[in-house]
Image (tube, rainbow, N blue to C red; front, side, top):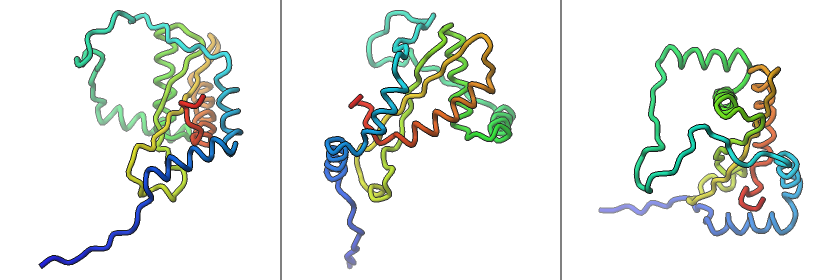
Length: 171
């Protein structure tokens, strides 16, 4: 004995793609495009890593480094983020940017991050690959402090999320 279940209608992925194409062609996202072009103007595109060496053959995990952060350090990081009035994501991004800036001795670098791509609630139930990328830029000089980088990162994360609809691949 089987009962028929009526599931709510979900928006199709093809409709999501069509709405993105329409937004691009209509110019609806021109302001977001302009933000990204200005934000990324004159950015250093390559990371000058002191650890660069030829890559091994695909399929290995030699580029992976797994580690655990203990409960005490995790609690301290969360407390530092909260006392700085930033999200945990923003705090960890600023810490990662600081590490890269120091390791590479660069004064300007870009870090990519993935966002959901579903800023409109109408697409919440859509099954499909709706993600997009945002880029966060870190600029540093000898007089910079972590607090200054954290403040800039918070501002940049906020603006990048406001402009996350514009497809990174279209830049």
